[in-house]
Image (cartoon, rainbow, N blue to C red; front, side, top):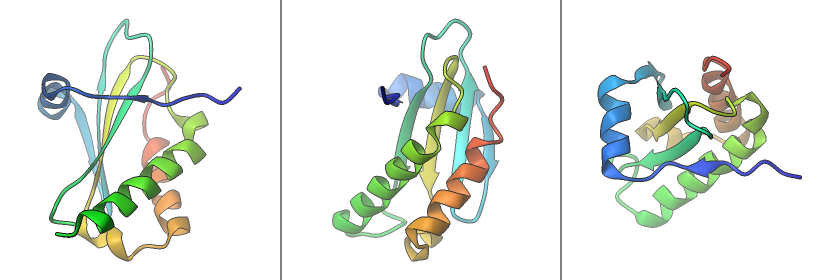
Length: 114
């Protein structure tokens, strides 16, 4: 059975992660994570702003690639207790999928296991 990645939603959750969470920055991806004691599942959000591309079709392509990379590395994600936000940077548009997935995997491995 495939493990489904729960999605993080809600402005309050995003604000909480950005204000109180830990942030790892890279040239292509930023990852923000906040430990939530007692949370039954790790929840993940992917954010790609207009800085990456003014065209929605390109931003959506990047989001689909990030979600695919997350599914590829889901075993490395903590199973519970975290809210995670992955933010794409403008340089991300020029990466191949393999490079993007490798970069994303490097960031996910930095998260402590819960």
